[in-house]
Length: 156
Image 1 (cartoon, rainbow, N blue to C red):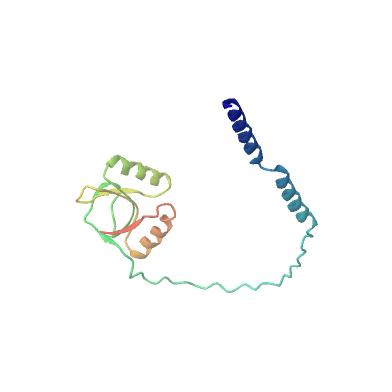
Image 2 (cartoon, rainbow, N blue to C red):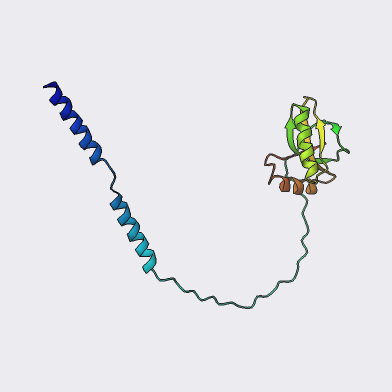
């Protein structure tokens, strides 16, 4: 009796496994239908009408001074570099000098005159560029934010 019960249970398990199998023919039918639709759709032909273009005269753009840009003022000491001007663009801050030197080397290889300054709390600020006027510093910071999104302005 026990053998018949085990045999019956095994047959039930086998039947349930076979019935759960996915039907590949259903997928094939859907694929064929989609393929047929793409073949029967005719390509749409578009006509492009071109008109002569007029060239506008060149206008001279004058930059207005930036007055509402946020800058951070810190008393920093130059550790490495040529010297800081009134406004600088900081792209990295590190507590370990070797990390700051690695970023300085990367910036120098990219064509920047990178410098390292240290604040009173012992943080090494990596400065990518330094300027006398705020407008130039803002422009440089905005360019650098493509690669260094946390770049900020330091006012000496």
